[in-house]
Image (cartoon, rainbow, N blue to C red; front, side):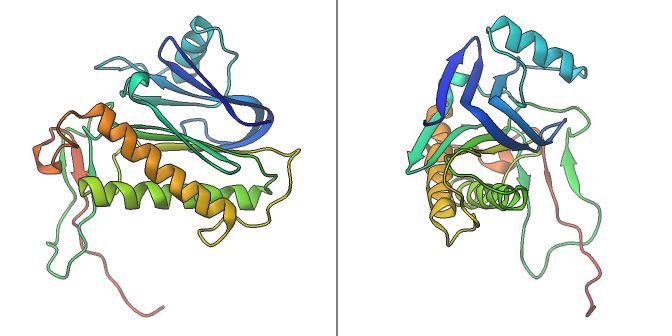
Length: 233
C-alpha cells in the first residue's frame, strides 16, 4: 500500500495505516498513527493554542487528529514527488528567510533580524512517507537526510538554506521491508533526496510567479552572522 494524499479545506493529509511518524512540529516526536497533515493558516495568524486550533481545522475538514505542520502557503501550491518507496509533499514559502553566510570576513556581533518578534507564515514544510520499516534511529536519519536536501535545494534556488519556521514530518511503514539505514548513500535516502528537491522546487515555482524572493528584499527573517570562539577540543 502506498502513501495516499488528500487535500481539502486547506489541509493536506498524507495517509498510510499504522505509520510510525517523527515530527519537528510544536508537539513533535515519535507517534504511531494513520495520517499526518500540513495545514494552511491565514495571514497574520496569531493563535497560540495550537492543539485546539489543529483539532478545529482537522475536524472541519473531516480528518481525525494526527501530527500536523502549519504553513502560510496555500495547499494549491503544494507539490508531491514520488520515487520508488518514497512519497514527499512540500509547501515552500520564503517570506521569512533564515540566511547563514559562510565566509572568512563575517562580522562580529549579534544576529541581525527583521521583525522576528512575531511569527510570520512563510515556511518550507515537508511530509515524507517511506514504504519501509525503519527503527527510530533510522527514522531520525531519514529526517536529517530530508532536511539536508531541503537546505541544499533552497540554497541553490533562493540563496538561503531555509526559513525561521520550517518543519518536517517523516514516516515509515512498520509492515514493509526493513531498511537499516536512510542516509544519502542508501536507496531510501537517495530517493528521499530526489523527491525533496523536486517537490520543493515545484512548490516554489507554483508559489512565486517571478521566482523566489531575494532574501534582502523580504520584510521578515534572520541573518546569522555572529562569530564564535573556535578551538581544538
